[in-house]
Image (cartoon, rainbow over all chains, first blue to last red; front, side, top):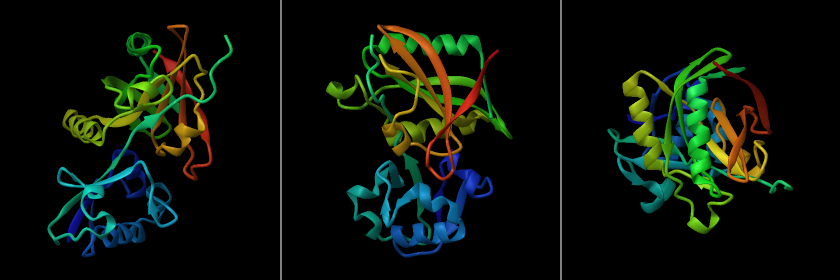
Length: 96
Length: 141
């Protein structure tokens, strides 16, 4: 089975496990299998059926956005990794 | 939840955030995550990769930064427990932009830098239903 590495903050939803075995022939199928096993992950990975903009899926060093996205085919021995894009920024400017 | 950080690490964050003013700066918090208590053991500044003209109100890291530092934390026997960034001339309160990009179970330390001087640091955590941030107790040891 393929494996998906879970980012540290989301391991609270996988019982602390860093790597989860998943079934599926594409990245999308593997992610669906992941959230079937660990449903609390869904809200943080997906906005409805779309991956959240800050959620990146890597196969090795390659971002799936530069492959075929969720339709990217994977081998049973593939290692995937979920990587959040960290971003932030202020709201309103303070009055000085 | 309680977040513990040393006065020395807080000062290092203040110094970094003043140095990046008027742009936003940030980095990762490494430490230990226990039930209802997070201890920050180290901080690692990470370059802001947002478009330069937007850096006065936006901060971002690359996914490669995350991979490298998550592996580094694992090797040190620590965890990525959160991240810090600055809000230049703006309060140390999470914005809607912060909420949209946030993860649960992660400490968000925000430093307000007013007129080039870091003057307020607060800690926050996204609720599991993603609806809002909760203010955390921040203890300087």
